[in-house]
Length: 340
Ligand SMILES: Nc1ncnc2c1ncn2[C@@H]1O[C@H](COP(=O)(O)OP(=O)(O)OP(=O)(O)O)[C@@H](O)[C@H]1O
Image (cartoon, rainbow, N blue to C red; front, side, top):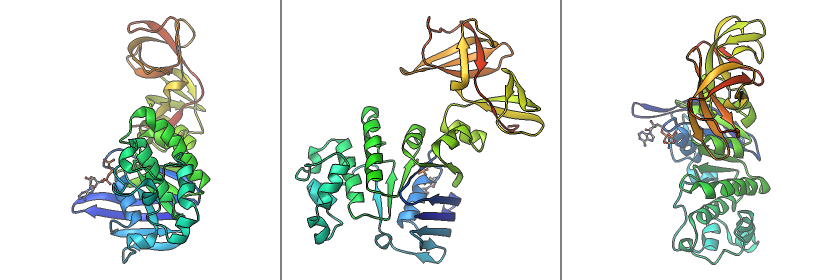
């Protein structure tokens, strides 16, 4: 439904998009995930038609809407945008907002009530925007985007202004609403959890390029580079030497996913692969930091050779404290990259 190829865009000397490629299949949600300033919003604005591209191609539903010589205006692209906040017309009711882009026939067909029900706000049509919470306003903004059944819905960090408690429910409900309506959507976010939990496809962006695109589990488990590994989650990166199917690391000999050639490499482990025990098997370590997160804790461990690794632990009895001596063993295989 969306095909972006080799997209380039600069603002003066600032290169915002440097050959970005993205393919989004019909009926799926793609998350464009990247750090601040990597070009996510610029990509979205180019797809919506708010910015002209310098080179490359954007096609929506097989129609080229932008390339070096073409710039189809935003309203002809029929691409809907859900901005961060403040999207609603304050003087129109919820129904007025949702029905704004619809013709009379569509308004009469009950589409407004249908999309309000999809986003969990059935019967809210008569309310005014100021009578809604921030989360409810974002639900209405999503309903308004879906109402005219656009070929593509673009969501620009739509939950970033909401508090954490509200965000979880809203993410699930918006995901469900998009799915129930068969919408194709692109969500821009810098939040790894949001991208991994909501999207069918995560496209990781760095310095104006999509550096990896794939299902969330693949991007997390098989990152294309140490940079992607660190960006999509906590990463333990260790120097190692390949020896046959294994790598020799500061945590001992570990099996490798796939073959990694010969010689010096950097291996990736995730903190949840670490098994920490008071006196089990494995490498001796000292606890140097303990960050409690409620559902789990991240524990920084220093091995006797000075290497530091991070372990994720669900609970421990007795609780670990800074200065404790433990052993750490590794579950599963490591992934090898060329030496950093
Ligand atoms: N209108 C503009 N004029 C000049 N430079 C711009 C403009 N818009 C964006 N930029 C620059 O282009 C680069 C990409 O910006 P963009 O807003 O696309 O990034 P982003 O990934 O969406 O960041 P954030 O997550 O902080 O919103 C940045 O270096 C930014 O400063």
